[in-house]
Length: 72
Image (tube, rainbow, N blue to C red; front, side, top):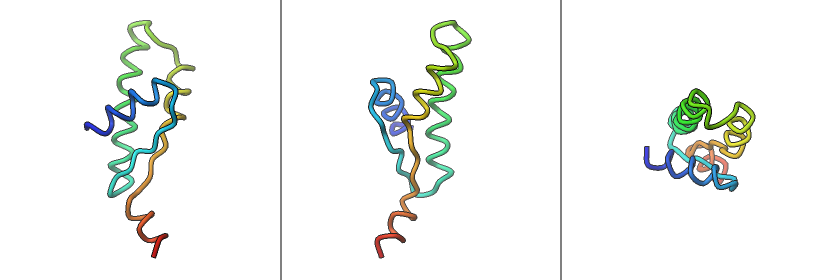
C-alpha cells in the first residue's frame, strides 16, 4: 500500500500520477485506497465530492503486463 499512499499524496498536491502494478486489479485497489481516504474526509466535512473527483481524476492506473506486451 505504500505506492497507493504516495499516489494519494502526489495527487493531493495537484500532480498527475500513474499507479503501476503487475495487474489492473492491484492498480484499482491502490486507487480505491485514495477513494476511501477521501470518503472519510467528506464524512468529516473536510472535503467535498468535487474535490474527491478532481483528485481521483489525477490518478491513472496502468498494468505492467500491458506495457511489457506493447513494448515487445
